[in-house]
Figure 1 (spheres, rainbow, N blue to C red):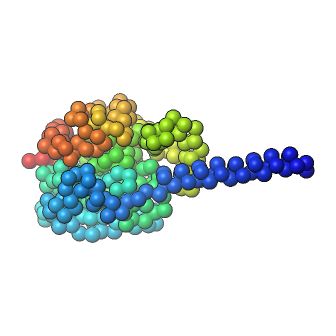
Figure 2: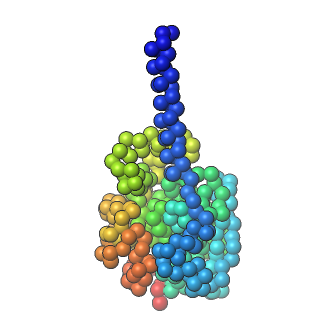
Figure 3: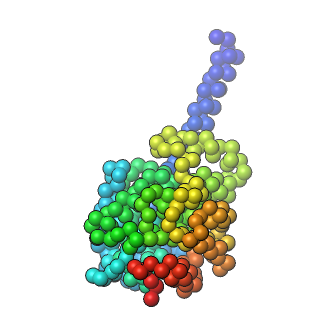
Length: 314
């Protein structure tokens, strides 16, 4: 081998290793969410202008629960029993890098329903098991497992159970809605239309348009590490097969997940669904914090139109 050829080979191999190392490191940002209780409690202080203790004081004392995932790990959560005579239950699904406590303000929003509420940590978040998040693919299976747990352990029928998700949790609930487990209704606040769209928006904002060049390669590494195909993580595709009525809410001022993603989802939902493109000037999932009364009115109107005897906002 000539010296120039040997030098070229060394340079090529070195650059390839550097590029693969960079791509692998970038995939960590997709697959390694920081979701400690400490981080969530600090967000409640910084973004909500409140604190964890105050938010918890508005709700009944919770019971800690652990539910088996179909994938073999445990899902950690908290069960808030409204009363001994509650006739409905709502499962709340948190967003990326959060945990069950990130849904406390949403729990207060639906508390007038008088339903039991189940808040839990997604896989690879909080205290739940699971190695990597999957953009809603495995998470939607977990949500259905949590729903079945409610049926078997609390004796609720599917028409007595609703799902409420925020951001990534909203996309998860919509993906679960495409399955055969038909609950009473779904409330989806600020979902992404698919996992790639969610990540690419944030990547371009952080790294500029050059992010598009690397992102598909990064997502292939995500596929390899997580054992899924990121293309399957799509609330937009799921919308075609959702039978439940959906209350879709997205702020026009969202700077993290553009509301156009919900516009696209809304176009493919069934005719019992309602989309509110709110104009309250709020950022991502902030409607429930900054406009609680108005937010509850949207939910109340939606539930009233459903005429489900198990749910009301009285």
